[in-house]
Amino acid sequence: MRACVQRVTRASVTVDNTVVGEIARGLLVLLGVTAEDTDDDARQLADKICGLRIFEDDDDKMNQSIEDIGGAMLVVSQFTLYGDCRKGRRPSFTQAAPPEQAERLYKTFIAGVGMKGIRVATGQFRAHMDVALVNDGPVTLLLDSKKVF
Image (cartoon, rainbow, N blue to C red; front, side, top):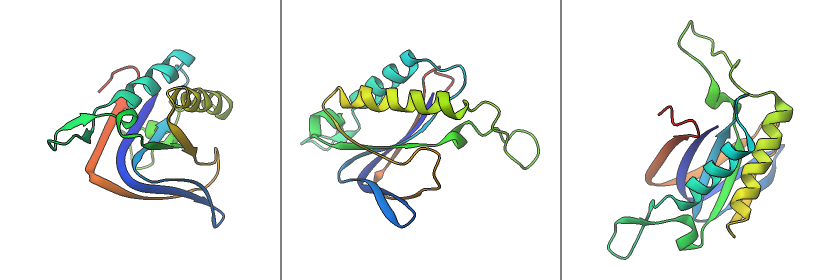
């Protein structure tokens, strides 16, 4: 499971001109699922992201988590995080999980975040979405549940 985590001052997702998910200060998480991922991957990645100390404390040091600041999380499914661009010019998405498995693990991840008491907003699975954000910092991190990077 892969996540592109962006610290934001605000973010939203729009589908067919309707806002379906929106947050103020917190994290925008673009989440990709591969066929090898399990419920444990989803729960562990949710726990890891919730605990990331990437918000400044009173001394301007990145020392606080989303839990510490009372922030929210916007989670957007993004199978293209498993796009393989090593050959040719057209990405291959063969590593991405089938939609049914991906949606189930996407929901498991969201539930894991919610269990931490963090307000979670979402995109719409399998929809064409417009994602808007103001990246705070900018701070952007890439995580992989298999720790390949």
